[in-house]
Length: 135
Image 1 (tube, one colour):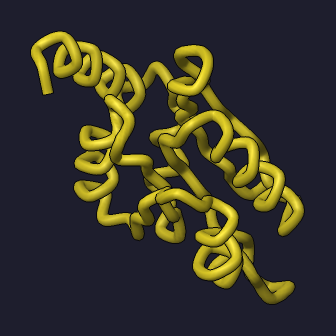
Image 2: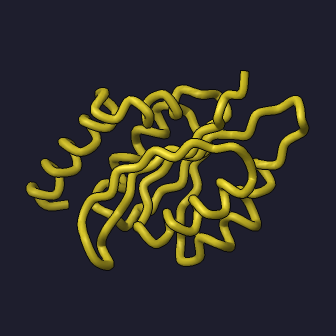
């Protein structure tokens, strides 16, 4: 990683974890949160370190986000009526985020928070999909 990428990644992650996006920190603090990361993105390794420190289950986005959803994530989002759905946080390409958001919101009453950065094929999104609390 070159110096510029290091500085930009550090600034991005510190703002995300440090309170600029409290929705991300709140979701990461939940015990049943899952994380999806695209490690090929500039902020991917730093985000992976963050979720590792939070001791969350982490999944690499890979080349087929739909396959990851149907083979792994969907199983963890199934719940009984007494359970609330898991939260999902991540840093992925915008196209992968679109697919995850569509699939995850079909599972349950989830609230979406996201921040998109960049444009075109390198656009990426930091996101949290969290359960809506029904009182």
